[in-house]
Image 1 (cartoon, each protein chain N blue to C red):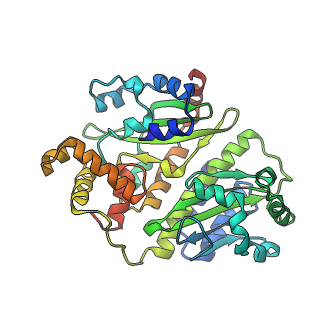
Image 2: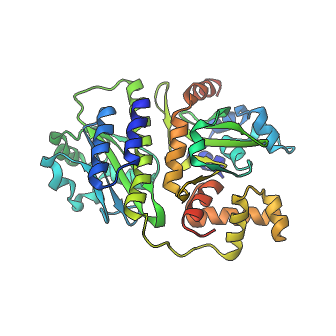
Image 3: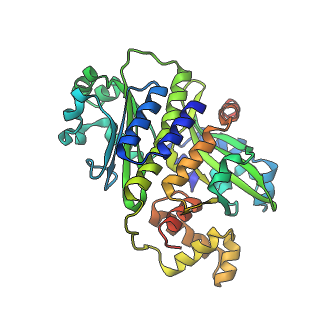
Amino acid sequence: MWAGDCESERPGAGTVRAVRRCVPSSKARAVRGGPTPPARRLPFDLLEEFQMVKLSADQLTTLPFHHGCSCSVAPHEGQALWVADLPGSRVAAIAFPWTAIAPGQLVISDLQLLNSNLVLIEEGGPISLAGYLSRMALVVCSLPWQKEARKARLHS
Amino acid sequence: MSGIIQLCERVCTAKTADDLTASLVAAAEELEFEVANGFVRERRSGPCAHHSFGFVPPSYATMHKDQSKFGRDPVIARTVADAGRPVVWGQQTYVSAGQGDLWEEMAPHGLQRGIAIVMPLAQGRWLAFGAESSISKSLTPASLERQVTGFMLLAAYTAARTEEMFFGASAKAASPLSERQREVLAWTSKGKSAWEVGRILGIAESTVNQHLQAITKLLDVRGKAQAVAVATSSGWI
């Protein structure tokens, strides 16, 4: 569904190139499994295949996220997936869209699209959607994701 | 980013609209904005329906509340059309929309360029949030990247705090989910895959996926995790 969104916004050769170049990490491949070639998957597609994991919201910022995959889906837009290993062979994954606002300058393009496979719980009970998005935004803003996204742009 | 993260944490602890305004002003200064304000709407588009907060230059306060101009403001239109996406605007945004006179009215009060966004809150409410400054200080591309990133973080925290502060104790809305959708989402939230949920409920994996797609559409969210966040915080699962 996510890839479809991107394709419908900016159809054309850029999208096809991006799909070919988006190669997920070994962890993402291992979790996803299945016979479909991973090169055809965009970060948001991959995210939907990670199983949900319940996690304390306070733990979120302490997770050791590392780069999963990044790809361009249009000349100035792309997606990224970052993953972190959790105890019990579980994996936390966060996907988000990015856009170039100036040459070489990338920002998250849509806060509503910040997504993960995490069910966040805090002391007072379940976290609201706005709370969820703010926690995700904090994690993403703390990651060196622009470096990987710039590489993806260069290769697209 | 550490400075703006600390200031966002101040937003989290705001107890009143005045506290929220004070923390937003501090965060706006850190991001080289002079003005930051927001209000809650009952629908995605439309005028302020609930709470407003933040700082607006006193000389512009009356014009800021003039709802007759909302309908032709291109920045408002773009934020409504692309909720969740930041709209970086300047004089050209208004001129190219044929609404240069609106920019001319704001400009003398220091509102010459800015960023605006509309964010979803619980129960179908929306937060409209913006930060503005004059154009006397030019921005490099790198500082614009920092400013937009900081603004989005601030917007996300402001939405979360606004919801808790103004609507946290309000009555829960009735669940729009069917019993089957509730079951599917409840098992999904426990980490079960679509195949496993299908086995538990005695339905096909593809049916589970269809239910999940219907749920995300019904709740107007992006993906399973956001659907779970909405449903659990609303007490539906």
